[in-house]
View: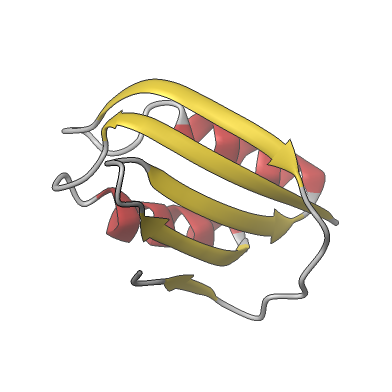
Length: 90
């Protein structure tokens, strides 16, 4: 199992990025959360099997159809044992 912290920048708010991220996470059986940040980016914490996390990261590089991802930062994190994948609100 792997835990990653992902920051996605670009046109990623107002394009259903959080909801689409949640749907992709469910599809890949990934747990964690996604939230909008005040600076216009989206922050994600994701946990799951390495192959599924890799596929999830590839999806995050593009996002949903109306998103325009310009930058993605990925850091390894400490496993939190999330049970679900939620949309968090700041």
